[in-house]
Length: 289
Ligand code: PAF
Image (cartoon, rainbow, N blue to C red; front, side, top):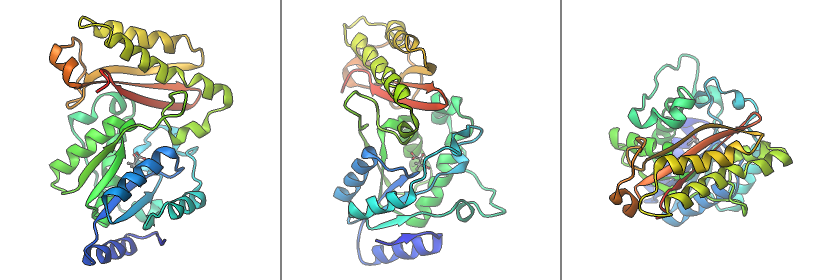
């Protein structure tokens, strides 16, 4: 399995695959691969002839958020894992290759990027979409697989692919969870044992919200949010950043639930918490569809 580090080498590899009539599946990652990534890679392998995994900790999407420096970077283990999973090629460029001196063009995502993560992390989605345009243009995959754990990212990427006529099928994959419900994330590795135990307040809070939401046709958004907040508030080491109930397609906050929203599963709840310096996010379909 080749590990390619320059746009020219990656493009040549992908061009050759396409000339041979092969479909290319793509899994963009920032490395520190975990069970969630493995499922994305499996999904890409099932849907395409060859699979490219990119490993690049993208400085542009961290902005002022200092967890860029502490982000785990076990590059050799990641490459070995990709090899063992039958990945066809890894693309692992350096930051100065992706953003050489003089680089100045950025993607500006729209309304979908404004709330939740976009509000909490200024410039985050501009960084995500900019690097993805670069990765997509070098690899030109037929399909790209993203985890639903980053639900807003998935929505922003789908919109960008539509808006820019990129002709890439964007596949969303359900969140992979630990046995106690914590969504699997590269950041979990940074938690101490007590912090890891405290982190379960996030999936527990979302579960409480789902339970209240499904209690009856008159469940109210305020009660749904309070039930979730209560669980996070009782965990002393967790600080809630935001929690929102929102329309699954437009991502606009919902204050009153309609019967249609309840029955077609068009509503999600998402939250972000901090435990010490570690930021964790999660989301659920509120009505379990
Ligand atoms: O979800 C991620 O890991 C990153 O945001 C992505 C899509 C690889 C872009 O850097």
